[in-house]
Amino acid sequence: MSIAWIGYEAPEPSDYRTLGSAPVKLGMQNLTNEDYNKAVSEAFIETFIIFDDPKFQQQVESKDWLISCKRVNDQPDILDGKKVYTTLKNGFIDFSIHPRRPWNAIAQAHKSKQRVAIKPKRIKTWFSNDIKTKALLINTIAHEITHLVSYDFSDQGHGTPLCPDDELVSYGIGNLVAQLWIEKQ
Image (cartoon, rainbow, N blue to C red; front, side, top):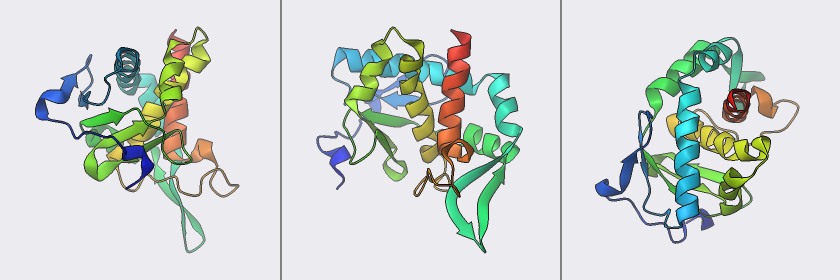
């Protein structure tokens, strides 16, 4: 078991909450700290507001995306933006959040168990007076949602010349959602 899941309590149906107009429910059973609960709830709502924004759709659909760092026959693993957007919109699932630092990461998604661990320090950024710092939590939630949507959206090996973060679905979507949210503030 990854250290991210130490102390994780699996959700009961009553642990899931509908927040804002999000098309999915969020498991709140591990967010026992009121500040963490407030931060994650508010950032979750804001993330889905951006996912519904026509500007988000236009920007996602306007380019091809790396869906992973894999190379097949020395070619990048690319998906056109319209398919990326459709996969996102059709793939949202209910999930729960665990405020725990994963090994060597800010956050970690576990698709088969429908859960995301987020480093508590990242959750606390929501209370910053600096809008760019505050947006880090939205970026992280959007990024991890891409991993929950599709096993194909992987970022193992990211940050290299052949797999730059901005071209990769997980990092690119997280960055785009945060950028669009900042613009709306």
